[in-house]
Image (tube, one colour):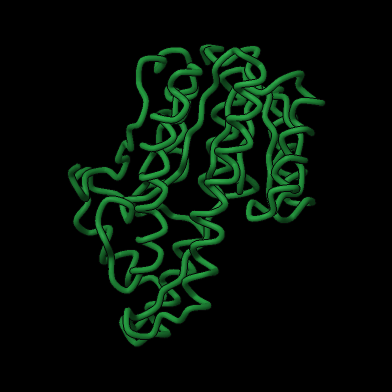
Length: 262
């Protein structure tokens, strides 16, 4: 593969599995030195080991993205291991299926703390390092098609992902003067553990008979004829973290095989 990211150091949160791990592997294959941040340190280290076993360079660290001190420590570990920071992919997130009228304050706070506040903290702390380094940087936020269109029974999840798109736009305006590019990707129906949890939630809420029914129903309308795999997000992430996207900022790209148009 073209070593388009050779010499670059990139942090990816929530990258021990799923979309995050696929992005990490794709960026590592393009030459980047990767720091995998995840709540579970052993899982983060195992994902890093999988990259290293194929000739890549990676470390795994524990991070809770809602804890600013933990985010600072993750970024410091990346700089200590790889020399500096060139990019961050804010992928860590959670989902919950809940009928609109049954969403509680606790449900709201949990979703928003991880999916919204976590992204804000990571953007802020990465930007501080980029500004201090005076070499620009790349911020890539993983939103969702639910950040472009509200879905029921995922209203609070949708709200959290709308906020990620808003942070992407506002961050582009805040950091452009420092040559920091801020963009987002909006995945669609991706075969990951998160969708397993969503599907189970549909069934438990009485909205589907089987765990897989919701996934299959949403996937039926995809124009390209199949649901997404995590690897489908690797190529566009590679582009957005490379110099080839240097004149692009504030954008939220839908990568869903053709479900919504924005």
